[in-house]
Length: 327
Image (tube, rainbow, N blue to C red; front, side, top):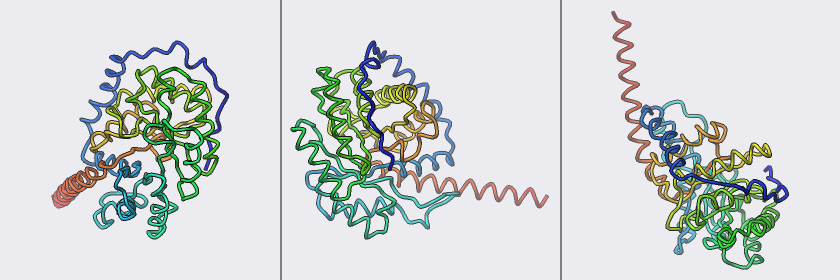
C-alpha cells in the first residue's frame, strides 16, 4: 500500500479563495444532465456494475451486531448470483469495501475471511470520534490504532469541524498529520470533512487542501449523519481542490462522496462528473468510492431491469442479422 506522505503546511493555496456557488451549480448541470440522458441501456448497465465495484457498503447504526456485519459482508461479496450476470464482464463482482465502527472490524475481518474475500474487499473503519470528531486527540489516535489492530485496511477519520469554522488551518493540519502517522502504510487514510457543518464552500475547499497536504489518501464529503451530506456542487468544489493539489504536487488524491447517494442515477451523475473533470483514471477503487448503505438496493433493482433490456436488444439484433443473412 502506497502511503501519501504529508507535505509541509503551506498557507498560500488557502489565500484568495473564492467560490461562486451559482457558477458551481451551473457547471454541475452542464457536466452531468445532458450526458446522463444520452446513456444507452448497455452504458447504464456498465455504470451500474461500476457503481457497485466503487461502493464501500456501510453499516453505522447503534444496533449493529455481529450478525448484521456478517450479512453485510456476504452481500458485499455476493451482491447477486453470478449466473445472472450478462454481457462482457471482467473479474468478480463485489463491492470495494465494507465500512463499520471499530468495534465491528474484527467481525468484518472474520466474515470476509470465511468467504475467502479478505484480500479482495477492504475493511474501512470510521474513527476519531465519529461522527462529531469532538474528542481528545489522544483517544482519537488510539481509536485508529485499535481499528488497524482488529483488521481494518482503511481508516475514515473525521475532522474537528470547529477548527474549520474558526480557520485554525495549521492546527487542523497538525491533527491530520498525526492521524496519517497512526495509519502509516498499514491503512489508507480517508479524511471526512463533514461538509454540512463546514459553514461555506470556501471552507470546504480549504479543508480539502489542508487534508491533502497532511497526507490524506482520500477526502470524503460527510459522515452521513449531518443535515447536508454529499451533493454534486460540493463534490465539484472538492474536485477543483484535488485538481489544484495534483497540479502543485503531482499527487493523485481520491474522493469519496458519502450520504445521500441512494440510487443508480445519483451514482451515475457522480461518475460522469468525475469522468468529465478528473478523467477515467479516477474511476477505480483506489481513487473513487461511494459511502452508502442503500445504494446496493437500487443497484440490484436496476441491474435486473437493465440486464433484461440488454438481453432483449441482443436477441433483436441476432434475429435481424439472421433474417438479413437469409435474404
